[in-house]
Amino acid sequence: MFKGTQTRLTMQYSGLLMLFLVLFIIIVYTLLYMVILRDQERELEKLTRQETRIISNYLAESARNELRGLGSQELVLAGVDQFFYYVVDAQGNLVMGSETIPHLRNELLTLVAGWVPERNQIREETLTVTFPERRIGGEEVERPSGSDKVRLMIDGSPIFYNNQFIGMIYIGKDISFAYQLFNWLLIVLAGLMVLFAGVAVFLSYMMSKKAMGPISNAFNRQKEFVGDASHELRTPLSVMLSSIDAMEMTDGVEEDPFAQKLLRNMKLEVKRMTALVSDLLVLARADSGGVERSYERFDLNIEAENVIESLTPHAEANQISLHLHAPDEMNVMGDRERLKQLLYILLDNAVKYSPDGGHVTLTLEKGEKEWTMSVKDEGIGIHRDDLPRIFDRFYRSDKSRTRALGGHGLGLSIAKWIAGIHNGSIRVESEPEKGSTFTVYIPLNQTASTAKK
Ligand code: ADP
Image 1: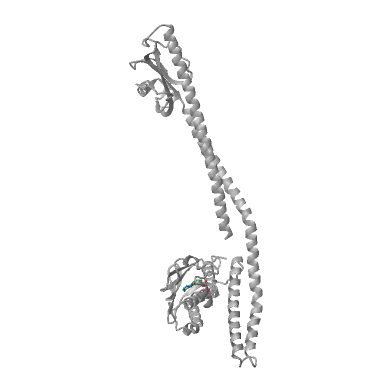
Image 2: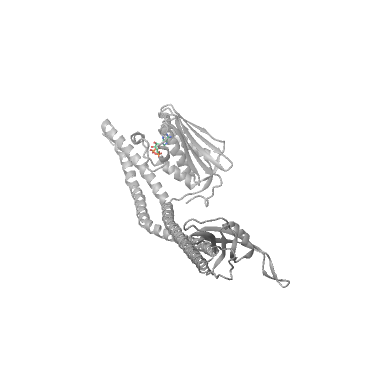
């Protein structure tokens, strides 16, 4: 039980830590992305402004009102790390320009043709560059052929002469390195995240362990207490029972109907308390894993007949008939006493919650992988809201009614535990006022070592 809570706590703690980590990484990445790209944009804008100014100054100095005929020899532009620069006249004809990869000129010119950027507008483009294989003197390969993606940031600015538009300058900057940086950053951050995820899980595990420690200790002490108390209560209860028996037979009491009635009631309550104490003891031992179990092969059919026989007087008193449907021989592997107890609990409940004249049927079946026992009654049934809780300790759907019938709400918890130690399960189908069917499924390959401790 504590293991489950601890795992849940670990998952919640580490989930929370991871959430913060992911948020942190997203914020750091976005900030870096924005800062680096913004920085590149500012640099490009500055460069474009600078080069536009150089051209304008040159035109003013040499009193030219058109760009045509301008040669790169006459003008040295300032940009050093630009991927390309093109100066085009008002008609869009290239006047001067240069690029890092010459065979891209046409592609680049088509890209910017006719583009007049709005204020502060900067474009980003991705180009696929193919390198032809270049050989130096016969065999030696200088650069293998291949293709690469180039990310470009492009800015443009109009050129005026005496307030008259005479052309455009376009400048492209290679920002592939920035994207490479982002990719690397992403890989590094992802790596860090995996690392921190491990650390987060470890830390959460330690934290939840620390948090659960005192609770689990207190629970263990309480379990021990319930176990010890139930054990200690058994002896005085059996002494009381035999004392009542002795008192009933005492002269004077035998003839006194009132005293007889009192003793009968006392006996009933002591028996009920003994049953409760022994159920508590079973559960307390089950919790601490201290129940001894013996696994053996036996005929469940015979045990079922015995249980039915022991319940028959009680059933007959209420005109309830008990039926058994089972194969002639039903050899199973398991803890004989516990499985008998399980049968007893289910049949006793079926009788308890059946109206007078009802029928209770026990069916035993052996399948290929599991065997089943199912107990069907035509009794009061269980409300849908109560179904998920009836296996909880001390849960009774109708407290006053079940108490009057002698129930204290521990039977089904024990039944579930017995099915569990055989790696099996127990399921219930029920409809109020129509009846209930409890079915227990136990796997056939049952050995002492596979059974849960
Ligand atoms: P109890 O000793 O009260 O019978 P159990 O743990 O055996 O305790 O059962 C829990 C509750 O489930 C009961 O109080 C009852 O309300 C309901 N229940 C169990 N078996 C049946 C049944 N065959 N028909 C109707 N209700 C049942």
